[in-house]
Image 1 (cartoon, rainbow, N blue to C red):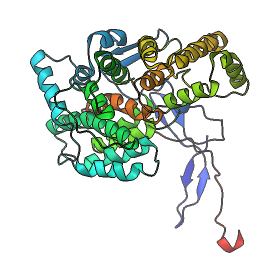
Image 2 (cartoon, rainbow, N blue to C red; image 1 turned 180 degrees about the vertical axis):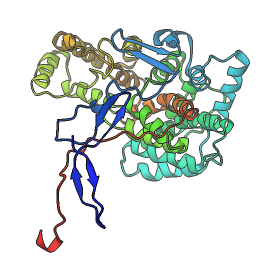
Image 3 (cartoon, rainbow, N blue to C red; image 1 turned 180 degrees about the horizontal axis):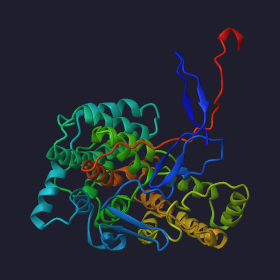
Length: 412
């Protein structure tokens, strides 16, 4: 393979021989013709680092949080407790949990300047994820400990950003609907407080349970694109606000967090369960991506689907939105029949949108609410990697020209 050898001239000329480095006994090549050097596109299957937070077994359809299957976590725990688990790597004792909840509650209020930014910017029909990205960056400006890298300060910042992310998103959703923001309550749980700010009323027991499970299911998912973004930025010893701002930018994409919005758009486009088969057949023939299906890791059912589908049954019934659930179930049936043999099954996005819509949440707010849950994992992974930091520095395979000469601009 080619290598650029420098000739001893004032303006170095380069002779192509080979560029590469030996890693674990294997020669890695960084220069070649397009398609010549093999690499893992999207870093699929590449191990980036060690973690104690969550693990996905894609072949068996299992997601565990620190040793517990996600189904058991949703059944027996709550979002605040899961956040404590991820931050401290153990379940809290009762007194620790009570103190942790008080910390989260006391950090809920956000600076007046952030409210003003949301109010002013929301007038221009900006996507909520773009607003959230900048609002979280603003939070960093008003955190006096933003650049304090002591462990104690880092843990406090993690608690603040987990708590305030919820307030920002709920306020954003309310302001977008032309309503004045509602100040957070220190008496309600995390899920109930979000619901209270967003809707201006406290949720009933069912609504709180469903929203709490929604946050738990989105709290972490191993090395997703947004989580990887978090630790890449953090690997340069940048602050947690910068890392989370980057993560939000990653989550905004339709191939990541934005997929749940696209699912609802697809359901609306199909309109009736009777049209599902023809819609899916046409989409497959034209090689269009069916949102809510397929996953980079899962090759069978996403375990989060079962939890959400159970909630979707009751929530859509209560909201009079059973039509959307019927369409989603028919899509799943047709997709499994047509592509199940290829390992393409429903993922968390298939039902999460239906659940949120049934709770009275606007479609544009689905991805920001994803962030309200995932901030737990982002913060935890950011802290975890600080203990063994090494800046990420992968390589590209260069496939460009090798022996070009500069041509003056007036001769091009």
